[in-house]
Amino acid sequence: MITFHNPLHQGHAPVHEFFRGERVPCFEKPERVDYVEGALRTRGHAMVAPDVDSSAVLAQVHAQRYLAFLQTAWQRWLALDPANASVQPFPSVWPVRTLRSDVEPDNFVARLGLYSMDNGTPMAAGTWAAAKAGADAAASAAARVALGTRAAFCCTRPPGHHAGPDFMGGYCFLNNASVAAQTLRNQGAQRVAVLDVDYHHGNGTQSIFYDRSDVLFISMHGDPRTEYPFYLGHADETGQGAGAGFNLNLPLPAGTSAATWFDALEQACLRTAEYRADGLVISLGLDAFEGDPISRFALASSDFTRLGERLARLSLPTVFVLEGGYAAAELGTNAVNVLDGFEQV
Ligand code: OKP
Ligand code: ZN
Image (cartoon, rainbow, N blue to C red; front, side, top):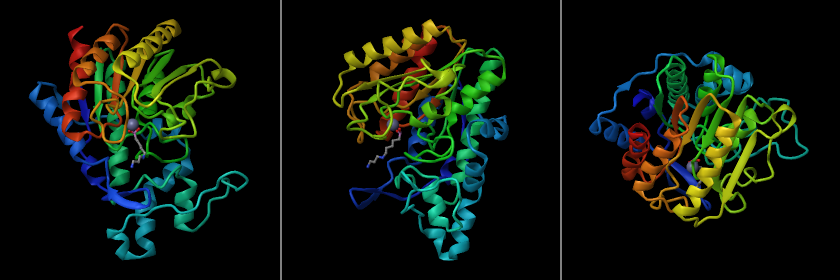
């Protein structure tokens, strides 16, 4: 499967995140994509550089003031103190209920809180460049599919599905799957389905398309009562306004077996077919894997082949976008199993 890789992903390499008050090494690390690229190469998949500038599509799915903040965040961080070059910025204050989010504070850390849903999304010097090149890869994959290629894969990090219209979170900065879906729409698709199979609910993608009927969002994920992102992803979130009925959440309890997971996948596929989608974007998280260190589903590596096979049977132009998956050494096998399963049908 033609794969658009992200030549700048290594520049996004924060060192630590927080877990229960302690600093721990980042789970979302460059080796993840190195393993996927290794497996793609070994198994004969062509890799090409992004060839589309996503700037215009980014402006359709993200707020301009958020994009402006992200693009200049690192230089503002350095302006506070040149020694910050080796320090990760973290937000420490957020505009929760009753506080104002319409006025941008001047203070950098306050602004970082305004544009963050958590303190778990560290930045580094190359974060903007890496995130932007990833969005370019997503737009490139979608543009290729819009031109008639059956399927394409966007192999990138940082992931995107937690990033909302105007905020980062959950290791995500720019919503690559939304960029892919919007690109398909811009290039002629009438109804695009986004199916998010990452272990974590794709809150950002849901929010970006929540009031739209031209993009159906479906997510199967760990129940937010116990799993990140906690504050979105329940079954009663079905869309609003013109988007009413075009959002489907399938939360599953932590510990869910592969058999139950595939029952949910079947529901997701039936809804996609009923919608009469003419384009499909898969938010391809591989953290439903039994060996994932921060997730609690039980898919085996061979189940990812089955996933690819089932998705192929939808017979839709399909864009795969890499999301999570933290069992790094198995990530290449699991991701390419999906693509090979898809291509074998
Ligand atoms: C991103 B994606 C673990 C903290 C977990 C958030 C998880 C984000 C997952 N110590 N923080 O959906 O795979
Ligand atoms: Zn995830």
